[in-house]
Amino acid sequence: MALKLNSKIALVTGASRGIGKAILLAIAENGYRVIVHYYKSNSETKALLNELQKRNLNISSVSADLTNKNEVSQMFQKIKLKHKRLDILVNNVGNYLKKSLDKLTIKEWHEIIDGNLNSTFYCTHYALPLLRKSKSGRIINIGYASSGQMVAKPLILPYQIAKTGILLMTKAYALNEAKNNILVNMISPGVMENSIHYPKKEIPLKKTGSLKGLAELVIQTVQSDYTTGAHIEYSGGFNL
Picture 1 (tube, rainbow, N blue to C red):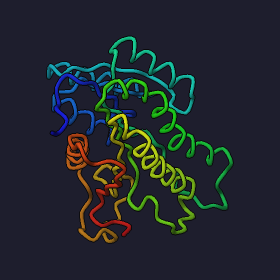
Picture 2 (cartoon, rainbow, N blue to C red):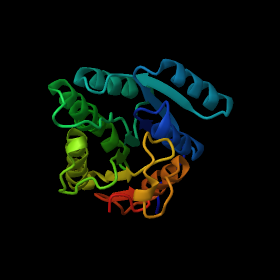
Picture 3 (cartoon, one colour):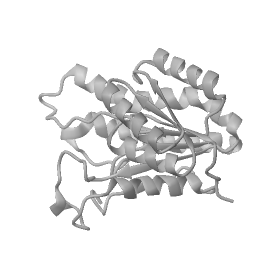
Picture 4 (cartoon, rainbow, N blue to C red):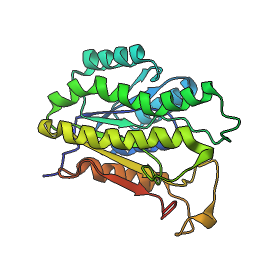
């Protein structure tokens, strides 16, 4: 039986805009109580909260710097105290940098690794006690098309390493948490409608991905009761 979408609770990190917002809206529209995570985007978060409240969708918000393990711990303590449970975690937060290795700084290296790999680990680590109590927990990690390929990409090296690390993390947690009925998967978008660059010539299907389509794929994965440890690309064949 697929996971029923009812009054269960989902947390989407970086949910005030872009991919995170699209995923959060889809989850909310399917009946979940949703928690918007944000850090600095206060005005966008307030606008999103107002939008969903007008639509009578059940929503709340939490703020934290996900590169700071103490703030992440405190965030999940707040969720535990307020909601008593968590059923879905979507690790969407992740910064991006395209820059020559010759110009890459030590600070930028750490910012990309912290903003993608470490933030995903911190959230997963602190969410697991709540997800285990759910007995039907789901974790969706957001990657990028071709995550895991052992091909040199000097312009995005720290990002590539971070996302490949998240793929390995996805598989490891899927294996480790199967006994707790927690399903862990990674969904990797390619060039999206809101992407900074639009190299359509490099996309076999000659079009960008839609935020709605990506969100629907997340819902389908969440509803599955037999998909875990999977890496699902939503890329139109980009980077094959």
